[in-house]
Image (tube, rainbow, N blue to C red; front, top):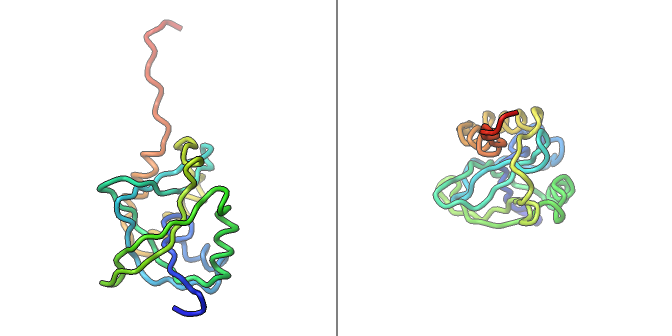
Length: 160
């Protein structure tokens, strides 16, 4: 890495190669890894919820690690509404047998109180395609979709 480049760990929309190339044209995929002790969820208005990661002991979230330039990072900051909606965190991950430091975005704590909800179809399919392009197990993505779904209302014992 050079010129102020850094490693960015994408777990959502920007796992998708086409979307990343469109928004961050100089970004290069480096490899897959995982955020240990985190879980993937979707938060926000139903059918418009966005991906986020939250601490959860024993869980892990697959990520695609990109080398990004300062211009790429500025584009991501804009798209992810940093610092209003998402914050940046750093973590060490294993990548190709080495430990490296990566940056990732997580929904701000006050925003993390948004309701769990389903993402829109285009958004979800873009993430799904990113998983497939990186040969990652989509089971975690589907688990996040299930865990973020609104629970069914309990049947009422009262007559209608």
